[in-house]
Length: 195
Image 1: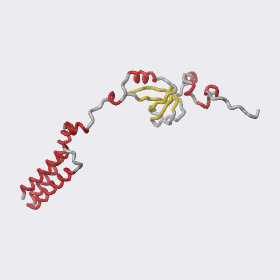
Image 2: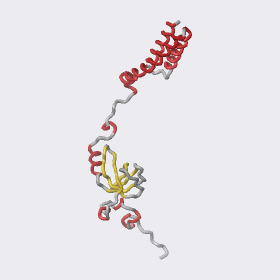
Image 3: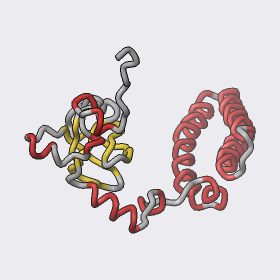
Image 4: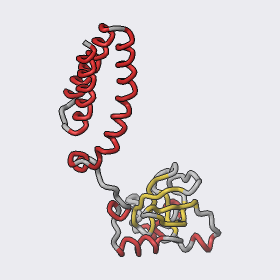
């Protein structure tokens, strides 16, 4: 009876290994669990020492086998199909020279926060919307910002609190809309029909 229990335990461990290589939607895992539990029960039916020995072998061998299989599995044909290769930033992000030139030219430009930035949000610079990240400060919508860096296609901004001459550098369309004359906004004034 002990040899049958040992055989069932060995068969269960082999089925566990097969589960990692053959996609079976867990059916092989259930079969492996039944085989291993049956082996331990048969061992205890034989005698207490045999059951304890088989239980100890299962407790030690199962994690060791799973650890070894997970190291081997990415190198199998099935593992190679399922797992992605190690991707580099160039593989994911656009790496065209015009993106790099455009992003590098943004450093130092002034704009305005379109949304609240906690820490990320949308900014408008030179009439274009960009996703940006605030460097350490929360920025309210409508506040002026300055682009301080572009790293890995991410735009980093800080609140702009320069003096009056610096704020004139900001394009008219990016300044506070309520402080601009109506003529600069391109909106025709409403004529009073009663006069």
